[in-house]
Image (tube, rainbow, N blue to C red):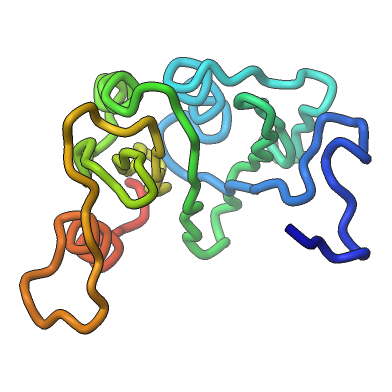
Length: 174
């Protein structure tokens, strides 16, 4: 794989960050603090205390949670900011267990664990802050790998249909 000479790899940075790090701006139950707890309970995420900063209005302006070898940065949405969901992908060892944990904490499962291309499995959920999560896990033993035909006019796959419906219906958290 060829990379751009303009981009440093995470290992070159040596500070625990990857070449690209996601940022989620959240509004919803418990705000950023509640979201950080959710990440710990569902993914075993760990907040980096020295990176935490509250703004003058008491809202979190910056927090960082380590999930595996990645960093997810987080802030509370200001009252006048437009709703912007994060779309996040996580590689996991057990999609069903992550779905169980997320659902127990108020997430909506939008795609049950299903075989996916490249001998893997896929599941998706929307968290209580209206962020959409893609989970990629190991192949399901004995399950046939799906075949994608871009020319097909047949029925949409569950994998495709569930994400299209979820994103059409996605609303800001209450």
